[in-house]
Length: 146
Image (tube, rainbow, N blue to C red; front, side):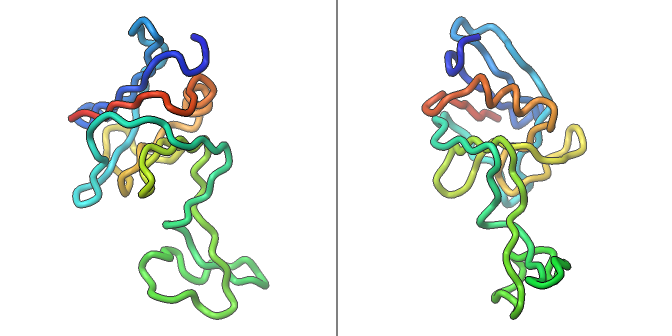
């Protein structure tokens, strides 16, 4: 498959992602994990807007001590202010492919098979997402359906 020639389809019901070539043939099909109740993954057709191999979240992370690296606050989004003497460390989202400007994308993330676990993103197995990333390109269509 030539890079970027094709499309990605995501089934929320099946918790599956399929990468198809430009003739509609399945190149990769794999488990994925989408948004939980109240933080659902949006449906529709999107285009990949950004691709970053070593992305870290600017919304979800933890506060760690500047001196020791010890975790002070595990879930930064649950506190209103940054604790003194700490720095923010965003959750790693390797092989990031942005679908929306408000923070929904496809990236490596842990999840139990068949369960929705994210805050809207599409989490992918670590062994599969690099393969999808290398076959994708900016502007490539991604369809998310029920």
